[in-house]
Image 1 (cartoon, each protein chain N blue to C red):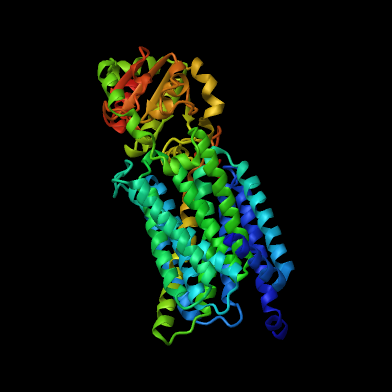
Image 2: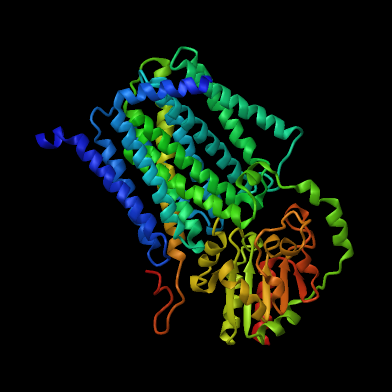
Length: 468
Length: 127
């Protein structure tokens, strides 16, 4: 017992080391669908070890209160996480991310007010942790609101938006610099509260003008930021577990962000601050849209070419998630497969509202993951496909990204749907997609449109295919 | 100019405090960044959502910071009590981040299944 007590700090640090190894092994196992679930469980075990070890830290006060807090947080979120629908996953990721950001911000705030004699290096860490954590918190909450459709998913703009954001941004930097210069002097205690509030406002204002289609980048950025904020609190508390885990998340989030931005052919800065050249594509594009013809069809006529095709490629987009049509699409695919049709899914990297959104959605409907193909794997096969079915996808199939240098999305890698021999597009209504960019694919002579709710259209198609 | 002077001052004070600890931390930092990129670079696009959600749970590690700071507080004055309340909220939110993140990720990964091979029932590939 004595030995235990004397070496408590050492043991706690060993537990942290074990936890860090668990996180690394867990992330490594996440790289294959077959081992991913175990990877996540190993990371969870690592977290449990780290939390348990922290409770034994010498001189830790308020242990009962800490336990109560842990239990309340765990039960509440465990309950919600278990009950929430799979289609609400992007929102869930956003809200849990926001909670992490808020935790980091609050820890930084309390550290500054309470920890005696902190050095300048630590103050810099605290101030940065506070700013990043706060932005991540309110940013995630706005992202949550947009995904849950509490707030409009369209870019929200107001007069002098850029200027207002810039002013608040400068205020945040100025307050931060002032606090670092003054150190823990009297007035700083008030300044840091002002900094906290300014950073919260800034986080909300940055995410508000970003459109729903850019959410994959936003969520990846916010996730990364919370990781960095966690690491910064680790510097102040001199806690290696926090530093390693936080930076791992920060780096992985940054990597995903770059990947997503690349898939849109835009810089991260352009996604976050550009508010999409929305005005440019407005009335002019809409006018040409009215003039161009669209061929409309009905499920019964569409079913025949489908039922007698050799190869069919399904292209899902956010519309599939909105209509909750993932089960209907799987049923259609199964009916086709029963007739010997080769059915595959083509997934664009930024389809949906978070990285890999379509994959989770289809997995929920029991679509085997070996039927899902990434853009590079399948793009050359569209030319061999007899039929391509586009379900609620728009910009990621727009040939203008390839052919029309004047298009706002020119240069963005797209799925070569237009190369298929025949194309059916399932779409809610006639309107242009996000930011009103006209999709020439819809006017292609090979394309026929099936307007209406995707779920409804898919089940009608399915019935018709079974009768064909 | 001021920034440079500050930087120099900061470096000097912190370095004289404990140069080895700082250097070690920087090493840890660098290695963790490379490791993060290396680990994630291998994850296929199929798993990007669970990956994000899993790392989301891992950054819940910040709950340790909340616990430690809460454990260093003593009630009494008004400000001290306010700080305790803030730290308590931090513990609750941090724990929620961790548990919610891992549970949601587990639910997602549970669904990822390979095509059922002949002779086996559905879900046989989901190990």
